[in-house]
View 1 (cartoon, rainbow, N blue to C red):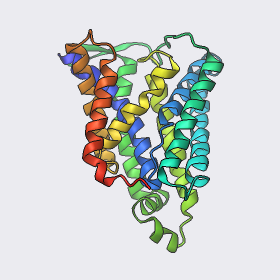
View 2: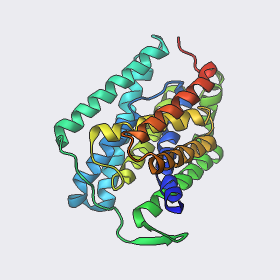
View 3: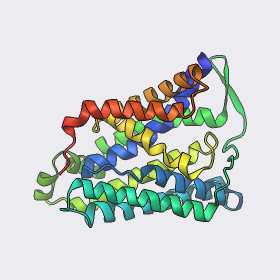
Length: 281
């Protein structure tokens, strides 16, 4: 059972990381980016493709730059250009980009499902269970990035401006803050976090555009479980979802798609609880 618990924490750490990016985007724009999972997928595929030629650092840098660029494009199309047409229309734009990125990935990388090589070789014994070095890094990455993001938002001038836009957008504009630029920056940063989650999930998931893109369900569930506002609760929601999925898989291994069922079920439950906070116009 210890192995199930640790595996759940490993997967939950990446859910938390993806959820943090989604939370940052939502807080600054009040728009849910449903292209988030596809952005993670594109970054992951580019990383695997370029790593043999550019090495670990080079491939990661290019992949995260691409993720940030897609975030800027999604923000310009969904938040900027679709502004004033209703939140639902803006969300539909992100769904369209989700499908577009899936199509691009299928065209560029093919439809053959592949396994990605390990990012870091070796293993470590944790509480009597052997985990690969990739799993250990993933386990630590979510909380570390969450702490770094919290410190950035709390103690840096740019972070404080982002918090002002997230909490009091109209007032932030009145005191001279360039809110459109800050919202764009938040979406770029959120998309980079999605790309980071995608990269470190490559050794754990099949390189399949559909499977990777469905990360949005887990990230959305973490966002909802976190109350759509709290970074700490989003991290806890991501870990909780990962644990729930692993426990369900352990007990109902013969049920096809049990992981997706758990993620979707928790998302629906959290959405029901949070429904009064969503403002669809």
